[in-house]
Amino acid sequence: MGLDAIAVPTASELLARMAGRRVVVVGDVMIDEWIWGKVSRISPEAPVPVVSVTSHSFTLGGAGNVANNLRALGATVAFVGAIGQDAEGERARALFAEIGVDTQGIIVLGDRPTTRKTRVVAHNQQVVRADWESTAPLSTADRATAVARVVDAVADADAVVLSDYGKGFLSREIVEAALGCPLVIADPKPENVAIFAGVNCVAPNVSEAARATGIAIVDGASLELAGRTLLNRLGCRDVIITRGEAGMSLFGRDGERADIPSVARSVFDVSGAGDTVVAVLTLALAARMPIETAMQLANFAAGAVVEKLGTATASPAEIIALLEDDGNRT
Ligand SMILES: Nc1ncnc2c1ncn2[C@@H]1O[C@H](COP(=O)(O)OP(=O)(O)OP(=O)(O)O)[C@@H](O)[C@H]1O
Ligand SMILES: [Mg+2]
Image 1 (cartoon, protein in one colour):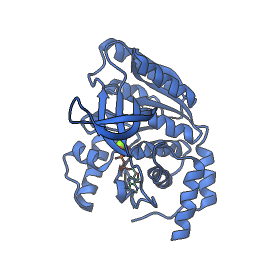
Image 2 (image 1 turned 90 degrees about the vertical axis):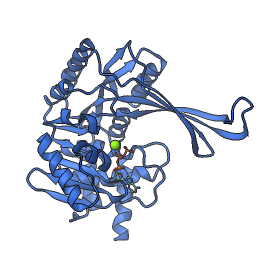
Image 3 (image 1 turned 180 degrees about the vertical axis):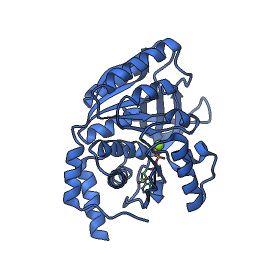
Image 4 (image 1 turned 30 degrees about the vertical axis):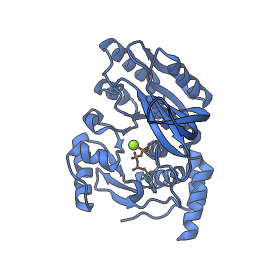
C-alpha cells in the first residue's frame, strides 16, 4: 500500500511548521576527515600508492550529522554527547558552533579519543580509511554526568533524537532520561536495540532490523514480521524500516501499515541518508503531523540527500524541488 502524494503548497506549509522546533540530539558524534588527492606513483617504501594531497576537510558525522540535518531545516538544536580531550574534540565543538548548535551538553572524557574517521580519496575512489575510536561504555561517574546533561537539555525541548553509532554513549539510563521528553525518536544499532524500549518511534535500516530481531528479511512477510517484532518488543508507537533503494515501510501500533518507494532521480552518495530520515521524522512529528505525512517528507528529504555528493543535508527548497519534480513525473 502506498500513500497519497503531498501537494507542493502543503509541503511548504508543513516544512515551515517544522522550523523552529527545539530538538535535542543525544548520541555518538564523530569527525569525518577527508583527504583528497591524486595518485601518480607507487611508494618506494611499500607497495602502496602515494597520494599527493589537493584538499583536506572535516565534517560532522554520526549523531553530528543528524544535528546538521535538523539545522538545515531551521530547528533549534542542542547536542549531548562525548568528545575526547584532544584537538578533534575541539574541532567537533567548533563545527557545531559554526552551524549554531548548542554544545553545553557535550562532555569531555579523558579516557578516550574523539571518534574520527579519516578517508583518503584519490580520483573519487577511497584508498584507505583510518578510524580513531573507543567503543567502551562510559565509566559510572561519566554516565551520571551524561544523564544529568540529558535531563537538563530535554527540560525545554519539543523532541529528542537518540542517534546510536555504537560508540558507547547511549545506555538505558540515558534513554530513560530522554523519555522525560514527550517525543523521542531513535536510530538504533541492533546490538543495543533493547535499550530503546518506550521511545515513540524507531527507524532502523533493513539490515539493522534483521540483526536486531534475528529475522532474515527476504520478502514482504519477513519484513512485516521484523517490523511487528520490533514494535512489540520495544513497545513503541511506530517502527519505520528504511530500505535504501526500496524506500521505507511503516508499522504502527494500531495496525498502520505503509510502504513508499524511494524518489531519488539519480544516486550519487547514499551515506547519511538515514540521518536525514530521522531528522525529518522528528521535526514532522514535533509539528504534530500524522506519521504517514512525516514519513513522506522524510522520504523526499532522503531522496534529495542521496542525489548530492558530499554535504548530507537537505534544505526545504531542495525537498520541495524534488516533490515538484516527482509530481510532474507521475
Ligand atoms: N539507492 C538509493 N536510491 C534511492 N533512495 C535511496 C537510496 N538509498 C537510500 N535512499 C533513501 O534514503 C533512505 C534511507 O536510506 P537507508 O535505508 O540506506 O538508510 P541507512 O542505511 O540508515 O543510511 P545511512 O546509515 O547511510 O545513513 C531510504 O529510505 C530512501 O528514501
Ligand atoms: Mg542508519
